Length: 439
Image (tube, rainbow, N blue to C red):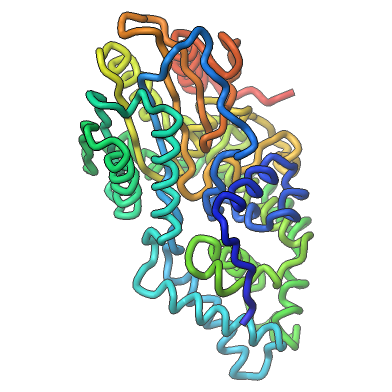
């Protein structure tokens, strides 16, 4: 069984991941192959090299508005494990596997056994991620979580999201026992907490989008090369193995190992060389962009799936600004909400609209920077006193300071009045007309 090096210190791992995350994807994957996992990336944590910019004029934080994804989980579908396992087991029974193929089969059996009965569930890695996020939130913005402060937390009705919420609340209460907390997970909130259940619309994958993505996949992903590493007879493969599906399943499983104890036991990345890793990610990145970004071939309006959520975020911020005490709104859901929300808000240029899906990474559109396991957006509000009607706000994406396409008051700080107008205007613009391509 192949083993992977155990990273003994979480701080070292976070610093390394944060450093390479900022690199162009191809170089970043060579430094840390796990980043190629797209939505299966285990939360890397904030960039340990960068400190938060102090607020201007001695302003103090008083409100945090947050939407976060659940933490690391096992894969959701039984077929994710059982289907590739069956393909390799049959080939092995017929003597059609290479030595590497037989070794891969042993590793697949181990992974399937680890996940059996726990499909889609939060792993211990996921629990740790949310404890860390809550602790850093408290350490960075203690004024928001002091005595007299109130935290309202809501989750989708999916158990891994509920447990992610509860883990953060437990950590906050451990750090600040006098904190007032309310929490809920109700079907009544699903219209804004997980509206992506009805998105993206089928129109996102238009014939033009499908053709463009297929051309990209066929050009970049060499499934035959991967099959030769596993099977001893390519004639057998051509007659019996759906090569594209098996390639995709194995890359998905390779990506998923980092989210559970498998990270210390097995790897499947040895089945893919550097070129394969980049190619598989390139295709996945384009698929996420078509389905959830502002891709004009898909209509350009895919992020509007989160218009209800964003309006809710704005309305709750307006309400909490008027409160005499600090507060926080914590929401816990899924990557299919977080990614289009970031695109709708235009954070860090993710509102990009282009048909050139093969060069997204060159334009800075890289999925793993947005929605790793436990990925989150935090809007932190600052003011001098409760009577201050014109607060400033800054945006954090995965706990790193982020930008909006607005004129800032200073550094990463924006006037809430400007941000509010921009966000509501962004929704109105996408609702009223097709997105314009970037020039």
